[in-house]
Length: 235
Image (cartoon, rainbow, N blue to C red):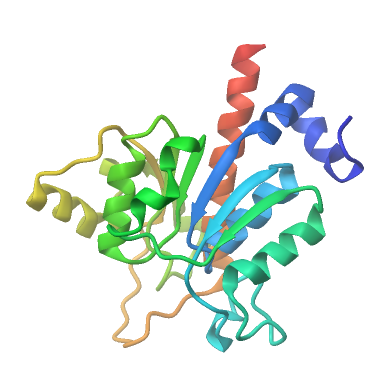
């Protein structure tokens, strides 16, 4: 029987959809302005098995856009602070919090092949390119966030296949990297991005919660929609 906290989710997704969501194993790389909201949405909807990965600690500059970042959590390990929040939502959730960085040296330790969904919300170009490459070698469904900084207009946020993303400098840099190295993702994958051009000479790339949260919620939505779609097709 579905827990009372998920009754509204089941009303939309159905019993089969909720059961399938409970079965999925998801790994999320990066729990900052985008990733933290993605994790929140997944757990609030009923996802049980979630691994969150981030090496960093909560900084005072994170408070404006990261869901677990408050004046009381500054200094705490990000994944630990987020895990505590997620378990407060659903104490039965199985949250694995890894204070690690995804790099060429650590990639094998994450066992990407054991997950049903892999979500990318990391910033490093090199590490992001590697995650894309390796995730696309697995049977997992893969979703990726492009750049959410220097954006103001929420209506510009959209979803497209990686090679069709337009107006995003991060996607462009990734594609150039793949072409230069002649190493390409094995299959297509969906990205959340914004084609808004913000003319700024700021040395620090500013970012706002109404943008980063929509990016994160959209990533979660792609997972939930895929699970629901599979359940409907199966039925």
